[in-house]
Amino acid sequence: MKVRWAAAFATLIMILLAAPGVARAQEQCLEDPPPQWLWALFAITSSMETNDTHGHTAIAGSSDNQGMSVGLLQWNFGQGTLREFIDRVEDGADAVAATTMPRFGAEFLRRARANATSSQRRAGVDYARRMLASPDATAFRQEVRAFLGHAAVRRARTPPLSLAPTMLGISPSNGRVRSASRAVRTSRNSWRSTTTPRRAGSVTSIHCVR
Image (tube, rainbow, N blue to C red; front, side, top):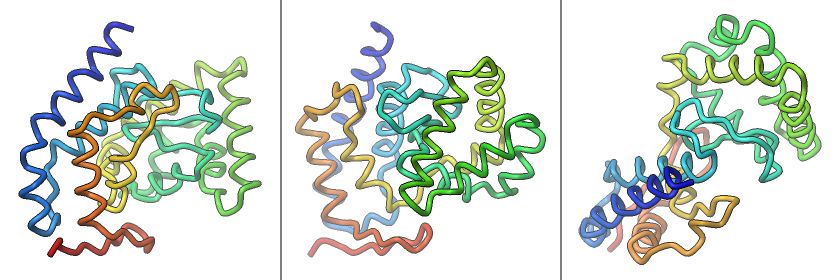
């Protein structure tokens, strides 16, 4: 628990240090967002949701009713975000899973991709819960970690810019970051006023503050 709070505190300090650049960023297009903003948010999401130091391969259970959440931004079955992450794997998630998830890969990817309807997403949540509670849970976690740790999957870790406002508005399920500091709120508001995301794959429309 002390390690968990220390990680969260260190992350908030990073954001506080980045805050002076917010006002300047509001006067220009955010085509190249300050990287410390994104990485600080990655750290908050990963450490607070999973208490796991392995950010890229972090796995969390279904305490937030999402079935299973993985990786830096905790992509999951319940919200259908796992598919968006998998689709960004350069060499193809199926090829990677064939070598890293020989037992569970095919079904894992099938469930992750079936996210078009709420019933499909619920089925994905149920699948993840069953796997994490099954006798094969340890082996399943090991294969998922191997998949997430593959070089091609790690390259897919950086999200499209359209996700930045979402990250800056995160409220982890345990609620410990719900009361954001002034610096966090300022950063979040800056992003929301300078980015206009639209859903077209990872295409994002950016405009400047006048």
